[in-house]
Image 1: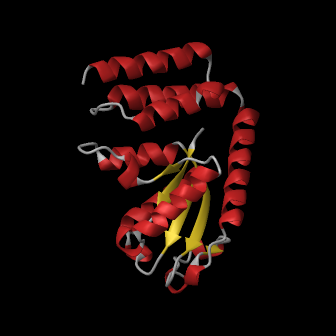
Image 2 (image 1 turned 90 degrees about the horizontal axis):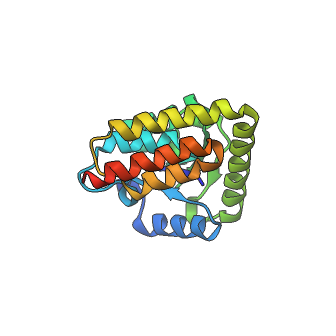
Length: 196
């Protein structure tokens, strides 16, 4: 299964909220990708972010007082919009006054003043995942071949050790690529990992 990418301004979001978000998504059987949880020490931050954005079926943008000042956040959600990835803005306390004009054109969920619409959020993410899977099936094997080629290049060119996120990304694509291509990606993972 692919994941939900979390875009946020670290200074504005409490660890308690991030833990609650992680737990709610986990309870719903959804995988959350967050930089502080998924990037290994010493890994290329930019490379890991780009890889995670490419393999996400949705991105949650945690809109907070300083989020419009974050070039990293703007890069993440604009990259996702450009790729056609579902972008879901979540307004946190003080975020409604700071929402970027482009994000303001999207329907958002308010998590302000202690309001926690978890059921609606999970339903939206489930819908985004179904839409993602349908789109992949409709595009057929050309999408699978494209994913295979993209991940083959990513894995071979990486100058870091393979992480659990890399393995999950390949396994998530198993049903989208041929058995032969899947076996080759697993071989590359094993080969790269033995080098470290």
